[in-house]
Image 1 (cartoon, one colour):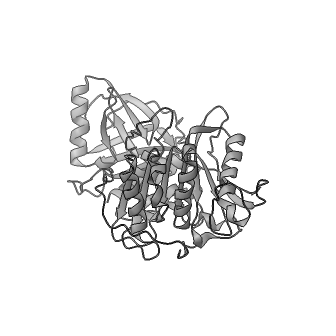
Image 2 (cartoon, one colour):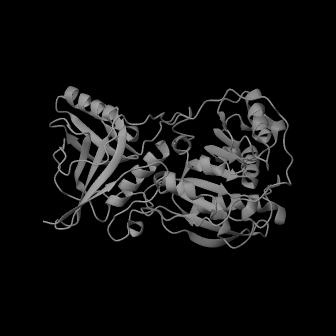
Image 3 (tube, helix red, strand yellow):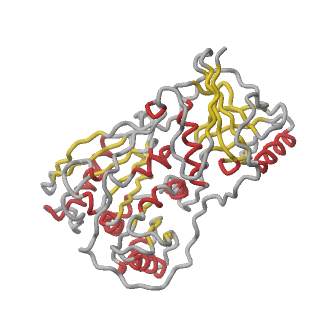
Length: 441
């Protein structure tokens, strides 16, 4: 039987997978991603606020990972498997995104025509309610080509595609500054009102979770996010304004809305003080649902680190006006093994690198070998020892892959996943872990 083993050494800033059959970028597990051909242009037509005090805000709660103790560069081709799994190949990762539906929304209330791109989950079903994310682009994407507004959201797909693939993402485009007049109508100046009308149409047309509507925007769209939250904050479960500014004279309007603010401290276009003053105003009004994330040394492109921040998406998609009024959330690991009590035993921070083996003679079976750090191996074996044969469950993001009972400890740092993936569906899993390790390193 012909077997081919392919090693993938995960290095810092390595984003491609080598040696995969038939160009895995074309496999069904790959996410559709928007084109990134340009960046946001300078924003100069809004004034900056002048607050200078720095908040004592909560820090980003992503895991603090250390380098693995072991330095091996390859694994045994016959690793010890701690589980007994029948080859079934029934696991299909639901991290896929349809190509966007592109259309133009005619707003009969104010006469605007607003191009927009709409992303739906591949697994979209009217039997399920989906969270909705409204994205508002920056000044560099002004126009009517219905494409440029997608330029700066690539990191949403690359690093948090499992979240995006399970939501309805709305990306309208405006030819002029986003402006929301207080009558929710208008001509050219009312395109933000038209974006809200478009949101209403999507809510009526598709199966949306009315308690999980989110809004985010960058630069000019960051200003728009503040504007929309100030006047229509009751619609949204959370807001994420990036490198923008708002009406700091009305902090009370935002106290009940979960908000995360991201802004580069070295932003030459929109002063960091614009976000600082909004944070200060909300806190002064008694708000405790707002957090400010200063991006030290970052310029105007706050969207790049923000939209790759897994903690942000873990937080945002946990916000639910009806079921989670306290706003509690847990960081969603890319990969984890959970014991029978629901406790995470190991996660991506315990992984050194990943290998996979394609068995061309057995229905294109793909066995995956996860090489753990020494600390990860010890944690897993310790859990096995204490389990007394109890069940463990393997997850990729929030999707359950399979459960197993530990029969014996691993001896060479390798945890193997056998009988779950084939050549059609392994790539999503491997690439998700690869992205996690790239981010950790």
